[in-house]
Image (cartoon, rainbow, N blue to C red):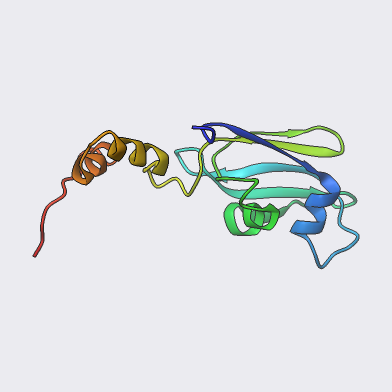
Length: 133
C-alpha cells in the first residue's frame, strides 16, 4: 500500500512549538529514538534542545507522534530519523499501532473471498478462532 513506507519533514522550529508549547524559547537541536519494542516501534524519543545538556524524554506515541500530528506520522515504526540542519526527516512504515493486522491487507483478503476466520489466523499464526458460547 502507499503506507508501506512514508517520509515526513518537520522544521525544527515547528517541532519545538508543537512539542513544547509552554516554552516559547525552546529550540530543537536533535532528536533520536531512545527506546523501541523488539518489532521496531519506537516507545520513547529523546529531544535535545539548544543551550541544554540533558535530553528531554517523550513518550513516542502520545508525547511525540500525536503532538506532531498522526496524519503526518502515521505510526511509530520509524526506519530513520535524520537531521537535515534546520529540519528533521522521519522515514517510517505502516499505518497504525503495530499489533499485527494490516487493515488494508485484511480488507483485500476479504475482497478476494477469504473468511474472517482465515484472515485472523493468517495475521495471528498459532491462534485458533473458536466459538465460546
